[in-house]
Length: 114
Image (cartoon, rainbow, N blue to C red; front, side):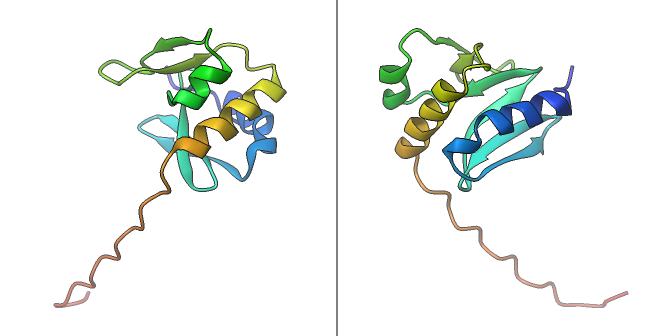
């Protein structure tokens, strides 16, 4: 079952104090980005955030679970109503993640154009 857009919009609103939050549809679910860094996913109307040491120190009680079959574990954030805690966790997590890699431009194909 795919996530409902209303839930995705709610999560984005809860996180808006963390920076520029965007959500992009990925394989029927959503990737959550802060300042261009993917740091979380929304799958089946549940919010999962990447595991980092900063996140573990801030929220040691969070359950770890894969967002979908075959995925590595993420923190499963069940209390999505606590905006302050979600923002702190997002900021701490993004602070540990590397900057996104520059995308290489694809060379233009030469040949016959239609």
